[in-house]
Image (cartoon, rainbow over all chains, first blue to last red; front, side):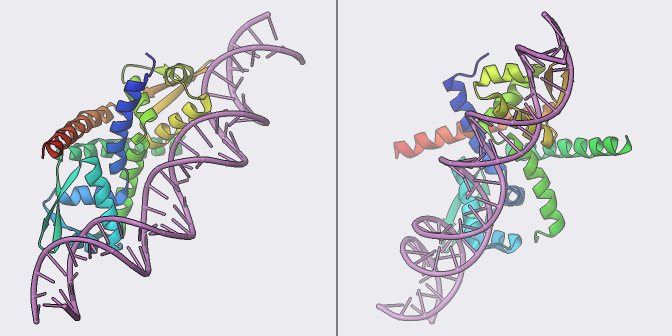
Length: 109
Length: 109
DNA sequence: AAACTATTTGGCTATATTGCCAATTACATA
DNA sequence: TATGTAATTGGCAATATAGCCAAATAGTTT
């Protein structure tokens, strides 16, 4: 089956969502938000990067539709909008475990 | 909870796996391999890119531990090593559907 | 209104990714 | 051995991403 331009567009949309998850800091943010609402300054303290950096990561996740924000007073609170994204982690762990096994096998040879 | 260097390393490893999925062509490849083994030339015909480009995408997926290869004669056959990766798609579709709803809501305002 | 705080945005540099072409490698067959 | 085919690798230019600083924005408090 050949990849036509409609399929291509669909894969591009999906890739955009996955790309938003493809960064260690953003994975941490998603993990942290799974425990509950967090404001930008809380996340900045945990991550230890410039607040502008954290804000931009949050903006990437928001653009992708993974988180949503809620401004209350001076602070902006972020929430996980699509908790199913957490299922990623389970499979990613499986992949990593399989990789470790693979390395062991190669070393034994 | 502060992000220490051990956590950081863990998130980096996970991000590497997700990053390997974060490209439209590689998503297509994973989708296609979920139906069964494919050789590089088959994928090249479907994708319509230079074979070196396809080969490099496959190498990214292989490095991440998502696919495995099997050389038989002149051809190299690729297989999906971790089928759970397909679960990504369901959630990604959910995100995309939610995004469409969101756009409708905003337009209505 | 002035000063302060939380966050976002713009701009910049450094680094990573992509995709093509050309060259190389590996295997098959005449 | 010479020729051909499938795939990988190296190299390059174009583009995208990341993270910091500085500046702008939005809301709060004095």
